[in-house]
Image 1 (cartoon, rainbow, N blue to C red):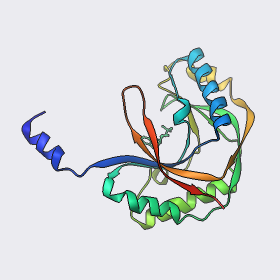
Image 2: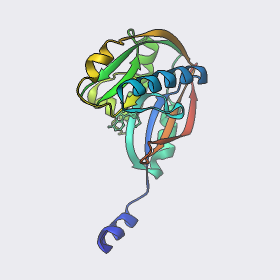
Image 3: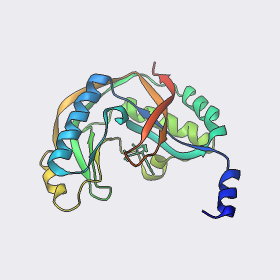
Length: 193
Ligand code: 2AM
């Protein structure tokens, strides 16, 4: 790294990689992590670890650390009721080489939570990934699946024994990236009514 780029780095305000997400209860995390591990053993790829299993509501990417209080307050402004998700299917996205668990039916409570959060973020000038690309609620189970062949094998496993997930809170997470995978820390917890 040149002296100039080192200086430019030092002058840039510190940032944090953040996202809002739901986190399943521990029993469900264990079940989903088992599904992830078994699929990765069978098909290859990197299974999501127990401590990073989540469903993203809004991914913001790198934001200035000084913005964190504003983002924390945005979560506080969301007034939604609790709901239950039924996780009952596995899917595979070829373009991302990613196996995920999700729902045949996306309940209104989840759509409402996503809509309110997006609205509050947009009102404060933030644009999240799902605002740009639409909301496709999913729990990533395996990343970096080998291309070629994985698609049809995974499609064969399309249904998952239904798992009920009562959602009574959501979180603002910070993500630190490492070569072994990301580490997540909860910055704020929000309750659903
Ligand atoms: P994924 O599970 O589909 O990869 C933390 O990075 C979370 O934010 C991940 O669950 C990831 O979704 C999601 N996310 C959404 N858009 C992202 C992006 N552009 N880059 C990285 N993560 C993103």
